[in-house]
Amino acid sequence: MATPNYGYEKRQKELAKKKKKEDKLKSKAERKLAGDVGSSDPDSPEETPDAPVSPEASNSPD
Image (cartoon, rainbow, N blue to C red; front, top):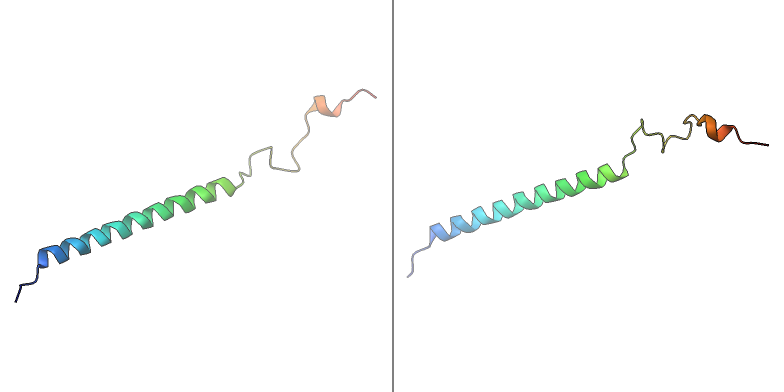
């Protein structure tokens, strides 16, 4: 009867752990990127509806 190759089994476990960790980090980075794209900056004048209007735009010749 052949003896079990414990070194091979250990290496396979290590590779699986490493792959799982990389996948987790990748998904975490993707969630962070997706969150940054959809987030709104409260100081940004383009996205605030109550932003002050520039004087040149409000002085239109009638």
